[in-house]
Length: 344
Length: 248
Image: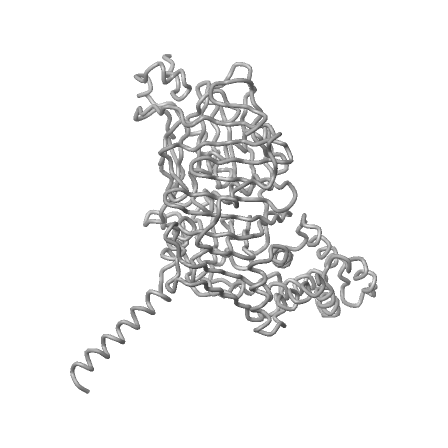
């Protein structure tokens, strides 16, 4: 064989192997990253079944990315006919069964749908990331990736990621022992180039509903330390400290966000009102756990898609920090700043 | 017409429709909302049955099918099959019922009979992915290399019958703790529910979801969609940050 042909043959063989490596040998983390990118950068319209406990609900999802604008609509096709429509930083929640509409506004500089925790090396300490093998699901070639928590402070995920589109066709939320808590299973997905605005109109005529609107985020006090958690479960770190108004609340609420790279927990801190009842203890809504307590005259509530023990741990560790003593009085008036520690 | 449509869908579910007809049905699915809705129901039924026994479905059709399964006679118990079928024939496609009936006389007990039907439905589940032409206007990463409309319709391979509550697609290389753990578990209700009204909790969950990853966010919002009591917090009265109106 001529030398140039040998070189060409070697080059071709190497290319084939490299190509196969990219296509077939991707690490589980790479599939997660591809999935995250697909979920946040593609247009898609689909119907999935959401199952939890003894309930199953069919939900339509419409997701559109246009420039920096992300729109998303979640519509319950059963029962309540509730729906959520997000356009930019505004999330409108329609509750036809309550004849109510709640409009939430995210922080102008807060994370959009595209911003999500990246799976990095540190996450390997708290999650075991396995899988990547090919599996057939719904007639499609998928890669199954499992994030298994290494401790009891977080849930795990199993994801069946479509090879061709990187969309998660099936998602399971699992407890530490691997039992399925919640599941999402798509029955169809369209990936259209265009999604018209008309698809983001609510199905219900809400003209006569009661509307509740939260104003945009109030001015954020940028003091370096106001409220903080003295201790956190392994792997968690604070990523956001902000203030925002809540529908139905007359004052802005301090909002701390902690994440381990996959799971996240929000802590909301608001001054207690003299006439309000004390809220303390655990609660849950779907896969979200919550725990509420009172710290220095403030109502502290931790919420997240984590086990109940995790939100309790974090909520009970939130304390006022010493530097808050130098915080302007105006900020304290907003309820964003805890009172100065009492002298004994 | 509807019967014919349902029959075709059912046959497709069971992997018994010729490839050419599958493609035609898939194209119809792409443009026929009613048909897609029916397809979705079939998928939901299969998914629900496959995932867990005794799931309470809200969908009327799904509920009916489930009722068939719940009345499924154990092998040799002498239950009158015809009566059961007559009860549901009005809303369940004949093909589905026929196949359900044909499985009654297998050797498995009632739950496994349900799983058998589930396997059939699961085998027929289809994912329809449609790619449309490229657009200069939008920046979503949906463009295809060819830039032309592309329809992909795949019917799955016939899986082995599910047994012991395991679904073939869930045969995973997982650690020991995860093996054989496809049963659902619902966390115990909190002993105290006086955290706040569910309404306030819903607001917190929504606000929190803004800072979650896409999967977690979806799970969080779905918790509210499915909640009996969740709704926005009631207004406390006029205040600076909350506007209450009776119209958008």
